[in-house]
Image 1 (cartoon, rainbow over the protein chains, first blue to last red):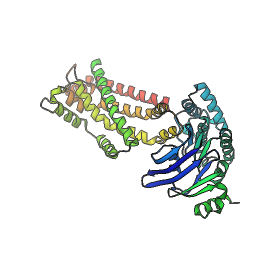
Image 2: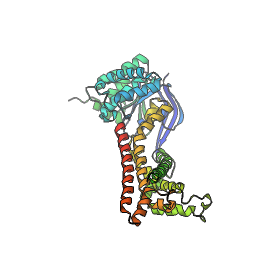
Image 3: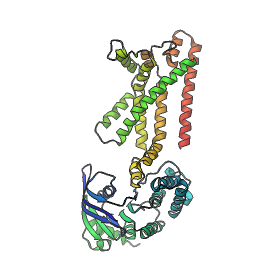
Image 4: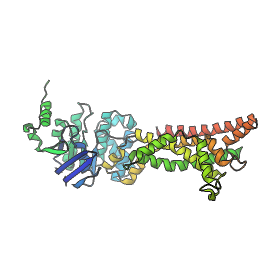
Length: 225
Length: 209
């Protein structure tokens, strides 16, 4: 079905986000841009989490991974189980089975009994990815989902998300500062600067743009040691 | 003795529950609300922490004096008047502690649950479960302050035997009469009540930890 927005204007204090048109589907749209460009604000507005003008449409069942995931008091397994049973309205036993599976997929099987609040930032992000996948979303809104995850585990988590998207045709909106993340999950990009769209198109062609932020991003991704 | 202790607990429990009913919604508004005046209310709570019980007692007694604005209700020297005075004393404490507990918890949790499409009712219960330990600690601290104060209980209750005499006012009277043994027994019971309240708080915190 896709995530679409038209004439989207959202205000947060003095900051104004103005995106005339936005579209994302299962081929994925990466939202890029410097700090303070409005990436997270766009993600919130698309999900209807903040007030905005203009129209937004998204599938009924969506899930999000926030840059700083909030967790509930209780074990990691309980965190995922509770949310799965509330969202999918399945029995606790069924929800727990799905939760175990999801935690196993993100490499948190050993921590499933640990208090979620005691998990490291990276482990919390894994937990957030697990609960987002476990609710079987038709659209995913991801805000720097791999930022604090170990470099050696990132490829596995990217392919986990990618295989879910390929299997379910789930729409993806990804806010990121990493081209590796963007290229793993997205075919197109929207680049924001000071609340406005400064570039949009295929991810493959960003190497040819004149935008200084994008040039720096591409240069950084080419670093060889 | 039993009657005095029971009245102490009853008046302070009622006052604490009334105060919580006012202070907790106010704390939620201060932390999560959007309209103006939130910082003013927080400042009032802060200032109210040092409110002398005897001053609150005097103000409430004045309100309910026969010639006062609410004299017609005929509440002065009743447990109800004592509970009203204790409520006023305790609201700032519960409010301030509830604000602190809300501010130390992750205030993006409601948004994150909404972003996962958790239904509204389940969201409410999950958030309530998160804030419950902090609120319980605030409420128990409020009860401790209410049951231990003497100035307001004396001013608004009048320490009438069998009607408004509570542990703190009974202690004052016993000391006045140089009945120190009696005074110490009142204080011992008061400390026992405080110990039970602290025990409840500790047990809840352990269970929720």
